[in-house]
Length: 150
Image 1 (cartoon, rainbow, N blue to C red):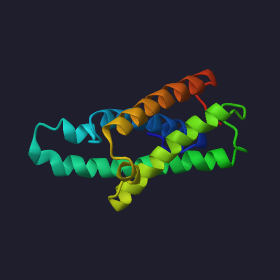
Image 2: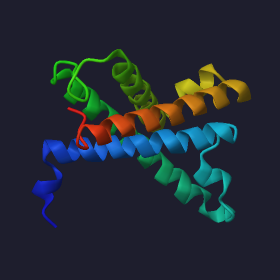
Image 3: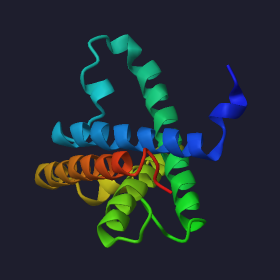
Image 4: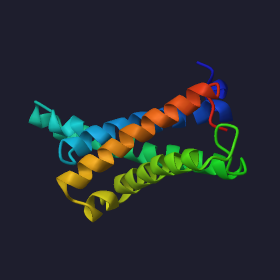
């Protein structure tokens, strides 16, 4: 395995973007089922709870790192996404970034700020729909721009 290949900026961008897309969709599912991570909600073996909880913490921290990296790349790319400055692209991008940074902080601190602010099934469902729409929109834009963001 060539580690150099996987750590090139275009590959880190790709991995960070795809991780963020998956996170948005998994977070949407979690919100639809009441704010519970699907891995914990559908765990049939209670003895695996600690293992799964630890894996979630790592995944959340990785989500924060991926979002921070994408934010860094956006800043150094003159705030251009998909080859142009477009408000819808920027808003969608920031929905993904804020969600990822929030999860990263949750992994580090054990406190999910977003969940604490809006603890309501209706709001969870609306945000879940927003996450799905954001993921679909960003994926289409990414695909149309040659599987690149910047």
